[in-house]
Image 1 (cartoon, rainbow, N blue to C red):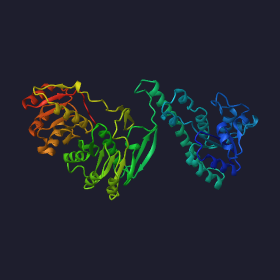
Image 2 (spheres, helix red, strand yellow; image 1 turned 120 degrees about the vertical axis):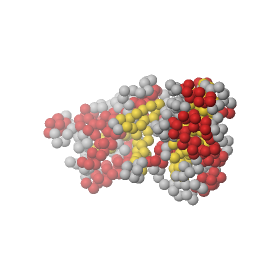
Image 3 (cartoon, one colour; image 1 turned 60 degrees about the vertical axis):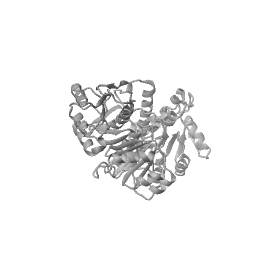
Image 4 (spheres, rainbow, N blue to C red; image 1 turned 45 degrees about the vertical axis):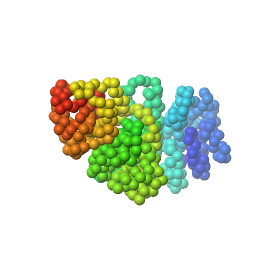
Length: 516
């Protein structure tokens, strides 16, 4: 079966001239719609317009162009079906062997500032998806082209073989159906956001695009891929970061980096966050970023080895020199000085990530989705602002102003540590962290064991209530002077009494921070 006729209707006209000229050189007739036809004619490409075939003009400001039986019969006719071919021959309809189509720029349109609703509506393509789906449905007879990256391979196959084999056609059809489904999902989700207050609808479509292929996943025997959301999220995140140097990010690097970025967003002051195995092992804020690093690192001097470090200010040469003293996998910051880049360049494998706007106030919104076998879990992101007006002092001893400030810092920290978790802080730096335990008392014991004398006169925060007084007793023995926790246990009175016995002030925040 020879390829004789192509229909082209593209919004993205990049590289289309050379592709169509290549088809012309193969004696393939070119049919096109108004805007694309005018564009091709400027390059002296011989075009037959769709309206010439249909004897029907484009109408409704271009809303109706290709929607006509002559076009769709030419695409959908099964060449091996005698009745189909007799029918189109009877109506003098010629088969269309190639459909080249990409869609109105809906995604690009909704990213624009001050876009009107009418502009949004007019960038919903109707004829394009219909053309693509029709061609993909009849892929055995029709070559469907939806991506500029497909142009060269298709021309190569046509030149060498005069046609495409079935495997090539199948791949193009799969890409075509994916193309239209992603396009529709973007429209659906945009309309849902703008017109519907239903946060968790009965049906939800998620559009993703492959961003990075990794050597392996969590373990060498697993494959790993990073997909990014479509449309691309504008908030600073690992999927829109820039790698300045180093090896490719691994699956675990990306998970840890996401934790580091989400944690650093909690803080306005210059801050350093150190992550190991998807949980913080040191967090500190200080008016001087170097001191923030020193304080975060001092929390746990051996866990940062092979870890991830994030900053919310530019990293200078002095900080870079200090960071270079230990082995780190990834460093994340909004910017780096020239001196810092020069120092880091000596560590060829170190992944250096630049993520703009981490030093600015970030508006966070949206949902998180986690996969389980057979489905997905979805919930709102844990971005509720801490409201100290909701706090309740429940002990005889009342925390002072500085202790309340430290509690606020501690709560921001504990929400990013794997449950069950506790943190111990002094001023705005962690001095010990315990997390990921099946019992809260074990988390407290691990933290006090690692923190040792640093725990004395510190503030403790817990991600959830204490079910028994044992966690309070462990903290008191280590020298804790104040505690903040959500409260809400049936044994709250027992826990409060324990705090009173140890002369510890305690605040109930009323807000739990589980992180699984």
